[in-house]
Image 1: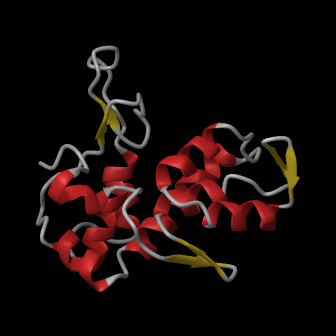
Image 2: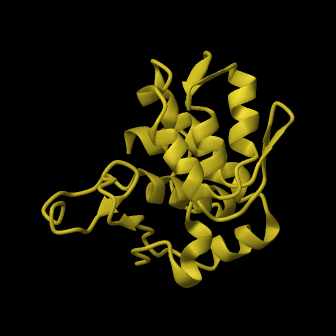
Length: 166
């Protein structure tokens, strides 16, 4: 099992540099892309009103994913974000692992379970291991999505309707 996306496994993190292009905007990590997609109407950020496109460009130009995450925590997401975020994350991860080197590293994880262990209380996309959350089973949706992409790449795992019903 890979339990944290740090060190040799940092390439699994959404903060890891990669290139995702959507609507002619280049995002430099999955985190950049994910936060940019949180809005579908104008947004107020740091006392300035941005159009959707202006906001997405601004996010794409930020230097690092940690800063991007802070931006994402300070804006009001689109009304359908809880449903849409899964689609956005899946697309971002799929695009990330189109990179040959990242794809090779992902395949090299074999059949190991990938768990996005964290300390920032994310028990939806990951599994927090802090004292406050230690008795909570995280959903680890990020780890599951990455394992799903790995299965698509390698041809392992259940396909299509099998994933849903079996």
